[in-house]
Structures are given as C-alpha cells and as structure tokens.
Length: 428
Image 1 (cartoon, rainbow, N blue to C red):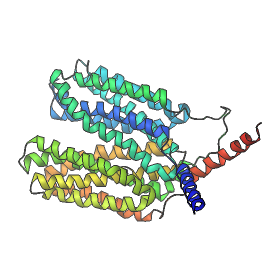
Image 2 (tube, helix red, strand yellow; image 1 turned 180 degrees about the horizontal axis):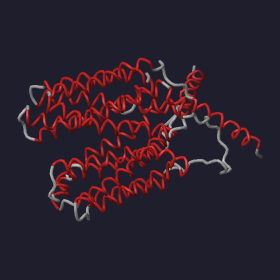
Image 3 (spheres, one colour; image 1 turned 90 degrees about the horizontal axis):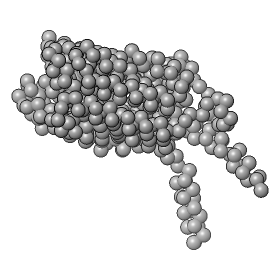
Image 4 (cartoon, helix red, strand yellow; image 1 turned 180 degrees about the vertical axis):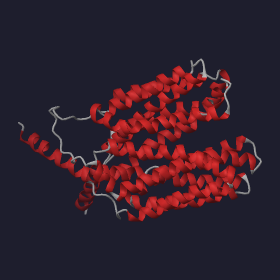
C-alpha cells in the first residue's frame, strides 16, 4: 500500500516537474511592461493639456496623439527586418531608449512643432519595443503556456496603467512637464532591465547547438486561418477600444448621461480591475480549452456589451457594461496573440509586426469614423459599427482549427536535452 502511494506521489512530482512553466523572459517582460505603462499612464492625462499650453486648437491637440499611433503604424514593417538583423533584445532596448529620450526632450519642447515631431519619434521607438517584446515572448513560450505568458506580460501593462494616472495627477500639480521626465525615468529603468536580464538569442555560428523548429515563410503564415483570425481580431479591437470605447464613452457620459468627467475615470478604472481579475483565468482557458472558443465567445460578448453602451440609462449600468467588456478584453488580449505564435512559430518578427500594424490601423481609423458617425448620424450607429467588427471576428473564428496546438516546442526541447543527458551520463 505504501509502495503504491510512494509510486503515485513520485509520478505526481515528476508530472509537476515536467509541466512547462513561464520562462524567465516572460517574467522579465512583465516587469518591463509595468515600468513602461506606469510612465505612459502618467503622461496620457497631461499630454492634451500640455499641447494646449502652446496655444493650439483641438485639432492640433488630436494630431499630437495621432502622430504617435501613425508613426507606430508606418515604422512597424521595418521592425521585423531589424529584429532579424540585431535580435529582439537589442531592438527592444533601443526602442525603449528612443521613447525615453524623446519623452525627456518633449518636456523641454519650446513650441508645438517640436512637441509634434518628438511624439512622432516616440512612436517609432514604441513600435520597436512592442514588436520585439511580443516576438520574444511568443518565441520563448511553449504552446501549452503561451497564453499565460502573454497574460503575465499584459498584466504588467494593466497594473502599470492603473497606477500611472494617479501618479500623473500628482506630478501635474508640480509641473506640466514633470510627467514627461518621470516617464523618461521609468523607461530608462525598463531598458536597463531588458539589457541585463533578457537572455541573448542563440544565433547561427555561435557554437551553441539547439533543436529548433524551422522558420515558416510569411506567405505561409498569412494563409493560416489562425493568423487571419488574429489579424481581424486585433484590427476590430483597435477600432473598438480606441475609436468607440476610448473616444466616445467620455463624451457619452458628458452629453447623454449629463455626468461629470470623473464618472468616466471611475467607470474605466472599475473595468480595468475587472479585466485584471479575469486575466489569469482567461489565459488558462485559452491554453487549456483553446484559442478558437475563446475568440468566438469573447468577441461575441464584447459586441453585445459595446452595442448596449449607448442605451445605458445611468452610470451604474454603463459601468457594468464596461466591466463586462473588460472581462472579454482579457480573452481578446491573449487568444489572438497566442494564435499568432501558433501560426508563426519562431518566424515571429514580420508576422508580429503586421499583427501590431492592424491594431494601430484600427486605432487610427476608429476614432475618426466613430466621431464622424456620432456627429452626422448617431451615437448608436457609431457603437454598432464597432460591434459589427467584433461580431465579424467571432464569426470568422469558426474557421480556425479546433483543439489545442501540439506542443512542438516542448518536444523539440526534450529532443535537444536528451543527447546532452546521455553525454553527461557517459562522463566519468
């Protein structure tokens, strides 16, 4: 009896040891994401006011925000090539350094054109960081824990994003330029962490032998239904989160619900907490149940909630709807990215760059289209267009393969370690 129990315990212990765990890179990237987002959250509430201090109109203020997204979009195609040449670790650190320097100089800007140019330069650095970080993350994570790796990384963004605005309010009380210097400081910390703690990639000719999956041509990746679903998912989320939710909800609160702007901040904060709480179970669901059902269900839920937002009779119902959207966003942030990793494997540079581009494209077009529809037709139609994109994503996801991807990366790792173990056993 005791022998049977001992065998059972030994088997359970071995299974626990064999179970893949988050890589060191995933933990490091989560910490980097926190420092990046704390600083970004500090700057965001102050940026429009700072731009306005140069005596410009509201269109010029909007251009400051759009310049960052536009340059991210324009520069993303080149980041994949940079990653192939220099590696994810170098591109990530240099990108963070560019954003840090441009942010510090923005705090010293003497006029509006200088601020506009510096924000555009910051967008280039942001594209380098974002694409390199996601490429590194997807490449270092085993398929069976890919979504949980992404969830931990995005958790850093969420926690930093919740802490940033509160600090931004305090720093803005000191000076409108103080948040920019604080942002530069948090970025410097993030860059140093990346340089010191991220593992350098193993390159050909380095003398290190490893069993790795072959690179997949981008043309082949583009034909994969998982990758196509991820592209549509990221575009629709960029359109809806920035164009509909981010741009119209604050106006809806002021003009329809007749509430103070503080209501918007409270509703968004509660929704962010709901998303943060849902992130861990959502990531586990995506890894254990599958990407397909996660995208189908989450995007359908997001469509229903965003469609109902303009009909909310009060702030309480609006907050509940935004919180439900936050729960759906926990799945929407992990399942599409994990699908990109499944389809692209180690060929992540260019596929991840395009994946990032479509989100930026949605973030650029969404606010313009939503604002135009709200001005010329109605709020309801503006929200309905966003909901339609989310529903289209949910419908297209039915074309994705069922089940969970085979853990090819884990098999390769095991195959790589077997010869080394045998060699060690032969040593005296």
